Image (cartoon, rainbow, N blue to C red; front, side, top):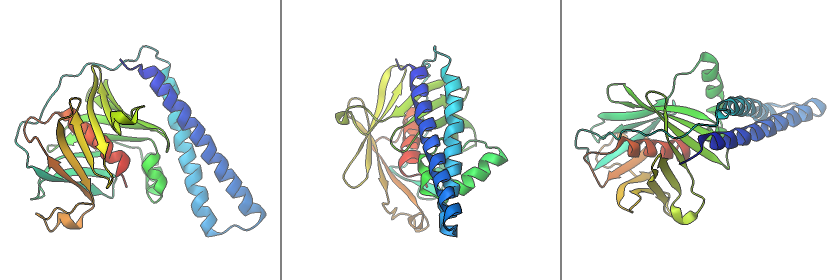
Length: 269
């Protein structure tokens, strides 16, 4: 069973190193501008360096505090599934507020991955970083909500550009799973691990599509970013991921959370 304390401490170190490095880059650029010439183009690099560095450092310090609890372990979770039959083809639409919404071809929403509640200060920082490519690698808190607006799970992404990990919490705040890159390439591109071990595996092909399977290799869904949903003219104009389900009933919510983690990491704007 995964030792959460060690994992979180490792993420904290990565975030602190990245944060300090970005702050140093910002200081060097600021000094360069002060000594030579300070132009708008330089400011565009300085501001994200300072803000990104600050976000990494703050999250790193917070994670160090969490990791002091050396008895952290993944909690057992009762598996729940969808209650209705879903269409074989759906669309995971990305919106500018850094969220994903799972729709059928009639644009009926089934669930969504949206950012967790933020303070005004956090929203201000996110707004600035949203205009940079760094946004895809910063620590992030999302939540999975159903079509009635009920929060089902929380997803906390930690780490940096080269190394990252997502933690999955249930609605009561218990950590029930982690999503990370396996050490061995033969074990897939991403894995979903709960208290019993590996549950879901994602493999990326040469054109950027993800096939998500269980540990026995049975494919559950194929995620096709950039593919056009020909059934809907409106959705064909949107940014998102075409979803092709191989099983349409009793879809485990743990699988949906895994899909959210993949989307947030690889296709997050």
